[in-house]
Image 1 (cartoon, rainbow, N blue to C red):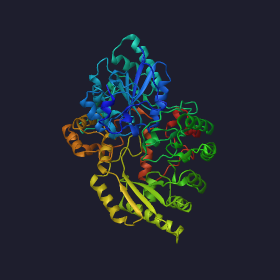
Image 2: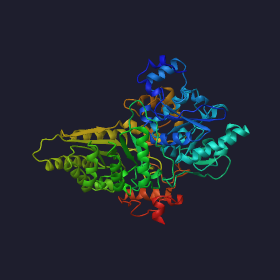
Image 3: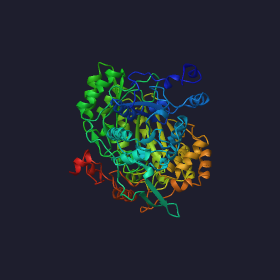
Image 4: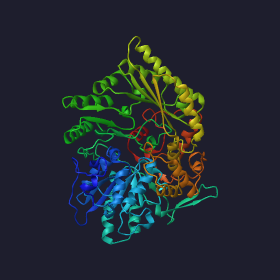
Length: 611
């Protein structure tokens, strides 16, 4: 059991103590369903995740259910827990999650998977699903990375695919019925297998060809595969937390997060979120203003962040921001506007941002030339980029961040030169506008390595070899010599590992397990990745990591994740892939429906456009 004496051994003990404002406290009674919502990262990151706030609220609204929060303990806390035989516990009750009915993880990033195994081990829950006895909790996961569940298939009992608000309630109802029958674990998993949005790996089997590719993926009972994601059609009717837990400790996004809409109209071919969160569904302005007012009243926060994949694509964007500014002016509450498109930047928008908070602005050209921006379907021009920066500088900003990717399909060094050219043009533009004025300019050029992801138009392409990525980074370092330009890049081994797991099959689970046994954890954090240990894990598992990350896949190859019905069809993704190779663009969903397949959900912008 955790106690105050234990807490003296660690830094920032408040993140392990609970008792925050708006925390849900329930008396545990016989028959209550207990759920541990686990975020496989540290408290400061996990408490910033909106999905946890939504599902924590929905589950705790049930009289028969108690949901508690769990985060990955930092290294000093883990050491203390292991030394004192303290099992991983829920923040609300401090009870070991081994005694709960359900332990659920959110899969936001592939490089947190070793943390999942570590958290199960800390809770003394069997790592492999097949080893869990009848009295152990059911372990499951959801989130964007669950759209390729196979790397974790041996560890989890089931997966939730799509939006979980309705699915989880249906699972709990089935659990109550199952408990009455006193059936075994397999009986329960077969029951929930009938629920749309549920995938139970143990009910499926995979056979491989001699070359390592998948020969067949099928159900063990011979039934047709029907794994289809879930969505919430009407977001105005969806439950949204206006009394989220307010942490005592500083977190990454310490503010109200107001979800404006789900999905994205743009169709950038590298972006998994843009495909898996389709169709676009918006909340009304009235509903958003109502939620904002309630949230501020119940939390005391002084900032609201409008969250979505591309906030400025909200159809009533200016009406919403004007209404919120008007409502929040007397309360001294600011509005932050992340996720703005370059081609949406207008003087009146920056006037609004400037009146709220004047900080550096980030724009994402993604690629250095128009040819490559057409390949990835970015649908912005160099004029759009320079116009956005021109308006930014005219409104008084002197700090701009430009985000690019390297290693994109068909990329050449001419495209790398385009990054350099744009950065230098932005510097020149600033000095043209501010001629004679003394003001320090800071243009940050940030590049990350492209990672091919499931359910995107680029799911078949191979990632650039690390040597070529390193060559491109060194080239940029040599060429970006202007003192007013800062150059940042990510660790290409991090992107390499992300690509291996993202496009992995069930066999990758062996490497994840071996890496965890070798001590890997927090692989995605700064200085957290020990790639030498991962290379050893791949050797032990007899896995060639380049075969997963660097290999171009045949269009006809059976991909580990394609049994899932996302709504977006394989035919459409193939079409987008071919259009990319031909440098052809596709208009956004509001301009023209491209027939991606999402209309089968009969909700959202694409359905309305198609009808």
